[in-house]
Image 1 (cartoon, rainbow, N blue to C red):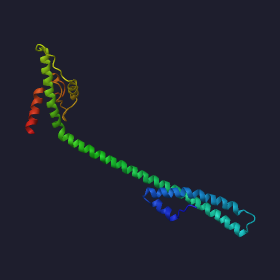
Image 2: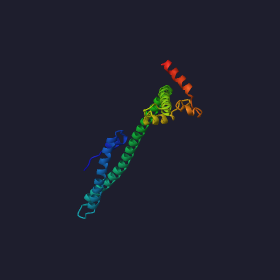
Image 3: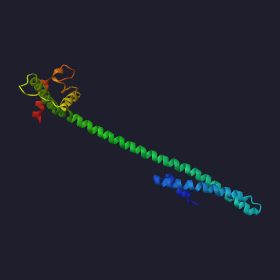
Image 4: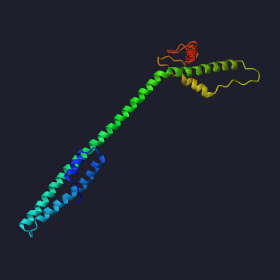
Length: 206
């Protein structure tokens, strides 16, 4: 018969080791039906008319003891299962807390870098966009009055797409440095001359 002492059950119920609790649960699950079987067989044997009174009483006591032990094992199994659930819940909560703290740390770090570097980085992009706008404008003028035998000036599609997408970028104070010059009246847009001044100021600061 599987062995699981009362002391082992108590230790497992108090344990913080999930594997130890699982092992105790496995032992209890195996032992409980074995005890039930002993109780049933002993109870049946105790009524054998060929037994002496003392033998019958002893066998009946064995049945009662086995049934009592089976009831205790069922109770132990419930307690062990509850303990395992509590340990698993605590571990899951610890994992959630660690995940939350990691997320908070990453957000704080990203926010600090954004506050420190975003506007400066956007001015770098704005400088490239301004150069792109000037190139597109120059190409448009040249294309309107092409020299003999010359093809139209080609502006790569990817540059035009990047220029269009850049309009969505704004500084932290809400100003839009990258709105094209012809839309300088759009709310939040920065006129080209001010943009050039900002870019020049950044260059001097660097």
